Length: 124
Image (cartoon, rainbow, N blue to C red):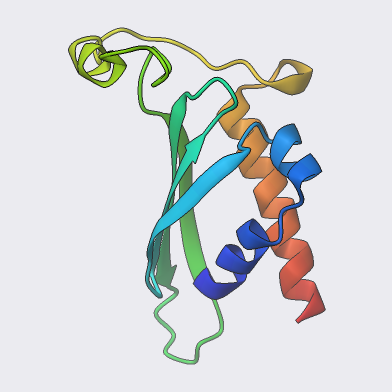
């Protein structure tokens, strides 16, 4: 499952990356049960995408449960000098990332990646 997700991310076209507002990303951790991706938006907001996979426990390899989150790491974009330090100080400040069609950006991204992953798994 983690390999399929990494393939989906690596196969994203520049157009799809632009739609998801993640033109740049780095897969910083990939194990069989955890994937951590650092993303940068065009305006250099730093976001994080985490997926944890847990075996369903049957021992037959018939599936797993994925827990995924996509979240902003700070209020200010990293293009602003000292933004990472200011963002730590402002970590208590609530903010939202609106996305397309009136939904939250994180929900939009998770839904889109989930759909692409489903399609990939059905092909294999």
